[in-house]
Length: 248
Ligand SMILES: Nc1ncnc2c1ncn2[C@@H]1O[C@H](COP(=O)(O)OP(=O)(O)OP(=O)(O)O)[C@@H](O)[C@H]1O
Ligand SMILES: [Mg+2]
Image 1 (cartoon, rainbow, N blue to C red):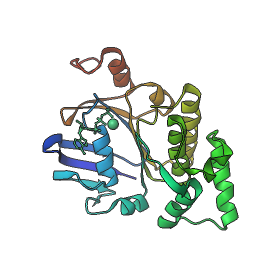
Image 2: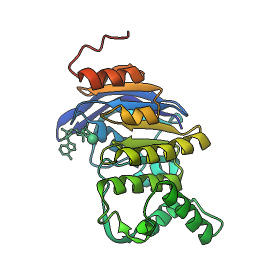
Image 3: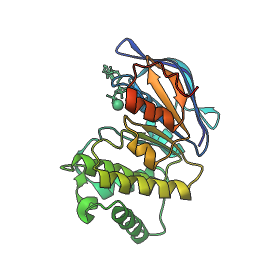
Image 4: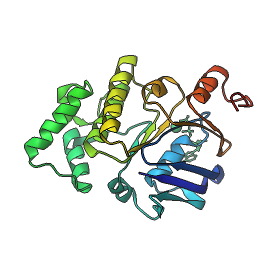
């Protein structure tokens, strides 16, 4: 899926968080956004997903050249946009497998039979090295931080999105779990090469597994520098208070 952000300006609590932001992610491309805490990375991911309550002052978001600004979250999900939350919520009383099935139904994704659906769910639970009973527990209730992140990727594998936003997937996952989860995402991308990815992260480790075509630095409401993986390494070494002149 191609996604293009055009001249996007957003106010949160009367403060300008995004200021005339432009970003184009073509089909099959992987982009990473890094930036200091509180700069607006999660805000951007929620705006792409269609969260209400954000004051979009100007600009547009296009999917395959059509504006999606007027679409609700569920309609954007149906188009194939999927957000892995930085802090996934829990829902007491709604079983994990029920929620996943409801999401599939809402997106018109059907399996030949309920049995086929259960097989696919079990296969992905195994692939992510999750405990088998997790499908039958209340959604994320009592899950550890890492288990919640794996559960996000379980939903991803079932929903088969075309545009994936990973908002700090790497926070909360231990070294082995991060590898398991990234391997699963890479396998998915190999099978679905036109799917695009936006990775929000503070660290290079996830980018060693899921290799970005471009790395961007978000600061003061805008992308102040773009580059490749080496830019991420530079940030890890020297932080954000540098001139970013190296390499160009
Ligand atoms: N509902 C809200 N009300 C008030 N301020 C908000 C709200 N949502 C976000 N903000 C503010 O907007 C700014 C951007 O927040 P955001 O969560 O997008 O940052 P971030 O770049 O994802 O940071 P981090 O790296 O810590 O995850 C922060 O200063 C935050 O406090
Ligand atoms: Mg954030």
